Length: 420
Image (tube, rainbow, N blue to C red):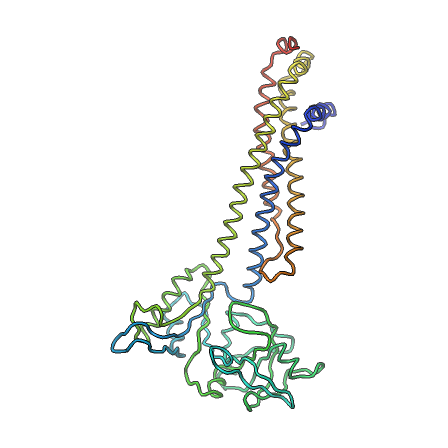
């Protein structure tokens, strides 16, 4: 290892490089470009992955939504075009018969799907807002951030059909004074008084909603609007590591059986599988990362081979010099180590420059995408991946350096001294 710190060794390496400046720079750029492509592409893919990870923080990844539509096929005496109406009992059956379902939350709403919004009033302030009837399980599927001092609907609220509500940030601003604490305050929903138990922070998710949404117990919603056991739609979360597409199919098959729908009728129940979409996005990002790895390694390999070619030419041009060194007592190992060290040095320098340029490119991408309306966050490459790429480059540089090194060692001093 002493040869690495030998001043004469490095003088010879830099002397060799300086004799072929243009050729060396062109070849080094090839290695630099390879690591740059890898850092830039894999970092960009990671930014997309991070963006969708952030977007899905507010809702379970293996979640889906199911609602009733119209039948398209007759069955068991029922005609085509029958309107499907989900029921509370359907949720119980799904939970009991499909073990892959972790949570299911029946939901009702005013202000979506053609239903009029709820009329809200407090003192002399009025407005129309979307109103949701929910169970506590809904926050297991789409967590709600409740400001300090408040809470979401609980089981007691459902059991007692309490007239309590969780309001949105916009609702608070429009109904309450700026310095007024809304918790414990009252307001009217369609002329019925409700007490505020929490204020939720709005975060876009895969479901329905906005910053002015109001949530009340499902049982209270049922009494307020006389909906009985009818359900608007189900929000469902499956366990991790299950086939969400298969779970969706099983849920629809069960609902068809419960509601006497033909097994081949694919229009009776609508659905949106958020878990499937998330998996597609993750797969796409992983594909880009893998592609960047293949392209990067191929480009790096091409560049490293170019370095090997430069060193072969250098060895040929330095035949007399190498012969003199051998005649003066330089061992084959010393000659071989110098050539290999030169190869590794050029490879590492190119790699470090490529990593720096790749990092600058990702910083530019991050700055340019901060204000766009697209789920893209913090495009970076994990440090272990960068170190791994650098290690691969050192290994390749060492291996490719063996070829010109062996060529240099094979030169006989007497033959080298005859070179003119």
